[in-house]
Amino acid sequence: MSIHSKDEIAELIGLLVTRDADGFARLYDQTAGLVFGVLVRMLGSRELAEEVAQEVYLEIWKKAGSFDRKRGAGLSWITLIARSRALDRIRAEKSYRGALHSMHGAPDRQPLADAPPSPADDANLSQLRAVVGQAMHALPAEQRRAVELSFFGGLSHSEIAQATEAPLGTVKSRIRAGLMTLEARLEPRFRSQIESR
Amino acid sequence: MDGDRFRDLALQEILTGLTGQEREEYESELDRLGPVGDAQVARMRDAVAAVGLNAPAAEPPAALRSRLIEKVRADAMAPASADKPAKPVARGSREPSRAPAGARLPDGGTFVLRPDRPEENRFPAPNLPWFAMAATIAAVVLGATTWRLSGRLEEAQLALAEAQASQAAVDSLGALLASLDADFSTISSPDASSVVLTGTSPDEPGKARAFIDPVSGRALLFVYELPVLPPDQVYQLWAIRGSTPFDAGTFRVDSDRRARVEVAEAATLLGADVLAVTVEPAPGRPTPSGDPILVSQT
Image (cartoon, rainbow over all chains, first blue to last red; front, side, top):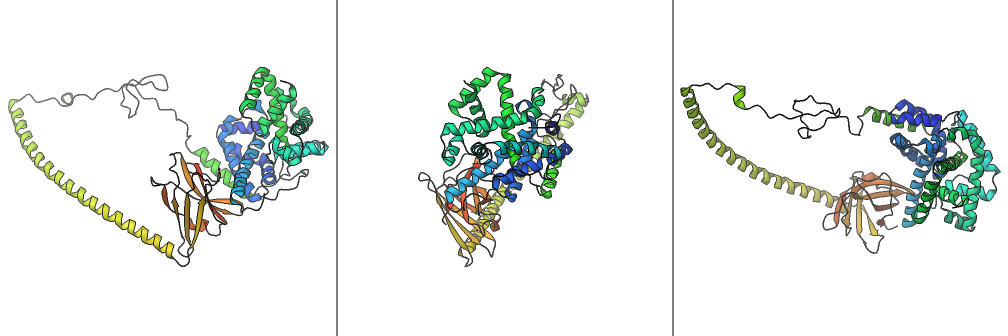
């Protein structure tokens, strides 16, 4: 998930292994707009997103040594850490809502919408965001909804089947087809990078 | 396994994680495919992560950057927590280390602990009969004096220990009384409110009551009938406002399955919609990871 000629984010993650705090600052500046955007979208609150973003970046700092370029791009590693920590937080709150009968439903989620380019992104990220936005927009509505429920909502295939009243097999096909389309749109941009890993 | 099945399993692994038979099936296919399978999964991981870019970018608060960079710089300056390379020690030197004599050094050498030289080698003994006799007499006199002094010292030490034990008992009772008095003041304060927490599990019901006095700023939690936890777990009290839990401290129960907890930040409990207790890994967590086992009645 990089359109840089080489995976600059992966290079910066490599600096963290040597405890390079300046490298961390550069990594933060290049990725914070994306990470914070994902967290706000998933958690529906800037305050919660700020707390979780702190956990995410400290985890990145501590676990940089576990990053493996063969398993995906640097930006993918960071994005998936942010998603996992947001899901942890959502699950913790959900269990409370269920048990306490005192919560008022899920936090307001932002409506599903195309992501506009943002001043929080650097130029490369804006370009990549535009590619992804077009690809997502081009997906059939059911595929796009299934993919978004899976990524942002953290729902399992069977939960999506229940939420969309579609058979489980259909849900799996929709997610697979949607992500393969996305992969195909992204791939020419970073095929050489993956193959050179 | 056909390609679609493999892709479905890989996506499930990336998005929610696989368990049981599906995981075994997936790993077996991944082994069979080798680097081709790894590359395919890497591309799928990138595609999944790309969905995150469909969230609008958001500018995080500037304070977050400052806070993080400050923490990271402090951590980078601190000594690494991993085992530090040990300093090589010169052969024959006395290294105050727990390593046994003859232990291997990081550079591949060894160090050896040599016994101290005997005293007689340090000072040549005078070879005079009268000197030996005088030394013997002096030793006997000194020995008798030392024995008497030693006996008196032991008596004094014993008396002191008894006095200290008595004083400690008095101090301890005084502290207990002061604590009970403070607890009674909190519980009986006209401004205090009390909140009952009941167990959520029919097997381990448990119960607790919190007393919160906004005037004195004290809050107490009395817990009953909770199981004693293993050392790597603690009970953690949460004050929940809206949908956000705030940490209000951790505690353990005694062998009678009870606890008295003085909440360090009583203000945390004020204005809470709900109080709850969870079991967390020691020494506690910033956010709850499990379901509550005690919950206040709403």
